[in-house]
Amino acid sequence: MDTNEPATPIRRSYRLVALIVACALFMEQMDATVLTTALPTMAQDLAVSVTRLSSALTGYLLALALFIPASGRLADRFGARDLFRVAIVLFTLGSLLCAQAPNLPFLVVARFLQGVGGAMMIPVGRLILIRSVAKEDMVAATASLILPALAGAVLGPPIGGLIVMHLDWRWIFYLNLPIGLLGIVLTTLFITETHEPRPFQLDVVGFLIAGAAISCLLFGFEMASQPGRALASVAVIIAGLAIGAVYLRHARRCEDPVLDLSLLTYRSFRLSVIGGSLTRITQGAQPFLLPMMFQLGFGMPAATSGLLMIAGAIGALLTRWAAPVAFKRFGFRNSMIFNGLAGSLGYAVCGLFRPAWPMPLIVATLLVSGSFMSLQFTAYNLVAYEEIPPERMSAATSFYATLQQLMLSMGVCAGAFALQTAMTFTGRTVPSLIEFTVALTVVTTISGVAIVWNRRFAHNAGAAFH
Image 1 (cartoon, helix red, strand yellow):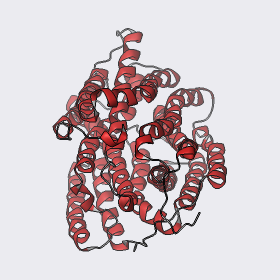
Image 2 (tube, rainbow, N blue to C red; image 1 turned 90 degrees about the vertical axis):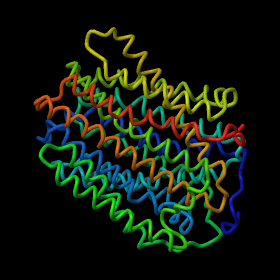
Image 3 (tube, rainbow, N blue to C red; image 1 turned 180 degrees about the vertical axis):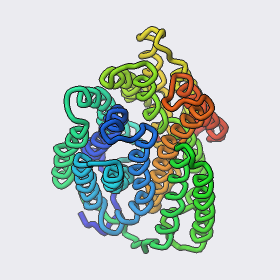
Image 4 (cartoon, helix red, strand yellow; image 1 turned 90 degrees about the horizontal axis):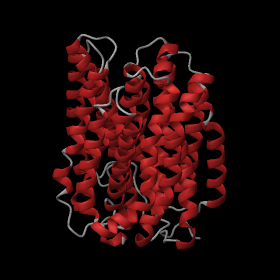
């Protein structure tokens, strides 16, 4: 195949490509879910508070938000396969360093390196898949991609609990090493290299400006979650907004901006960005808050809280078969309106959990909530690209993935901020169940607001995927 020619859909191989990309996503999802389950134990071992340990999560997500914008342009210039392979190498190396962390600052730096690799894996992997599948096969391809990734989310909580109880928490990161090596081998053997035929000029100035703006916003929100740093956090957030305004001006003048805001002129893409961003704030906060609530509020051991978190992942896994039927029967627009409300209400109910609740009811609530949210994100991830022309697909995947990870980062920060604020009002130094109720109510209200934009999708949105 001539790498200077545009890639065309390869129907017979897209499932294999999806499974290879999902190998990297499996590693990333398992890493994230294992880590959240182990946070209290890690905080104790590193002699820091649980809320301060959120900086390790934020540092990783910060790297994603910083480096995802450039990933599409880098894939066009150096090749999607080569960049994807380098990303897996960086993620695996970062995992090895995390396992050696003697203190919180070292862990944050190592997690940042992991995030650099993750920043490339997410959008470049999706770009590889989009270039290998026809639109009418996209729902099936996305399902093939989601299945192993969700398996990582399912396996993560119990594995994290078992590691915390029977091994050192550092084995959480050692688990990534064999998976990363497998991903490198499979990528080399089975993924065909492609380049965008039109060369792009990398927007270095835009990368630096956008990176500074995103960094300030994330660090500002992270600081807001810590006691005694309210004024400093406000100053940093204002600085981030001001730098963001500078980037907006730069993007209007740049021929190929690192984040191409003109993509927002496509209606489905714009609405998916807005609605998906609001919903992902809740999705980012939920795996941060719930394991802590079960361990600190219920007194559960890490292994038990990890097993409970499986319920939401299993619910998401079940939608792998339900998604094509639901979207064809009810349409994307109606599905997003219903699923968005149902998922938000479900996670709000999770904030009302108490030790007296029957365990089957808790499990059922988590399972149903996970199902609705998974359907919602499947719809967002598909309908966002239905109007995007092929030559702009790399820019669109980078833009969308940047906002996706930024909002997940915001979710962690919003959850920590709401929890810390509630603790300030109650005068507690360790959160109790009422503080978790307040925090989950706050973050689920944010995702509930997305219905305003879900209603604005065209009635035939997503028709190209039927």
